Length: 50
Image 1 (cartoon, rainbow, N blue to C red):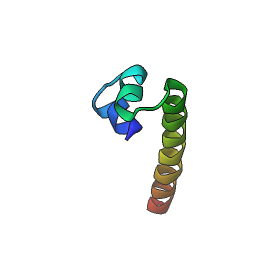
Image 2 (cartoon, one colour):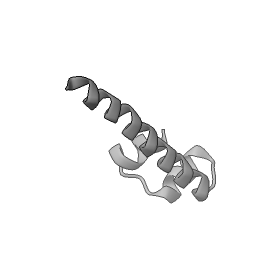
Image 3 (cartoon, rainbow, N blue to C red):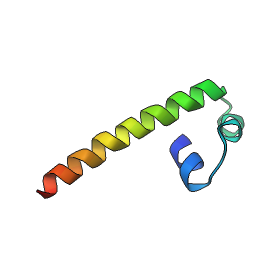
């Protein structure tokens, strides 16, 4: 949810924290973990193409 709000809906970390009823640092952690998971998933997809 944090990834979608941040990148697709262009919400700030503060806005996301208010929407999700979480602290700003928690949102930052969610974004970090989400980006890492996407890298992992997309990396595996790209490797399968070759």
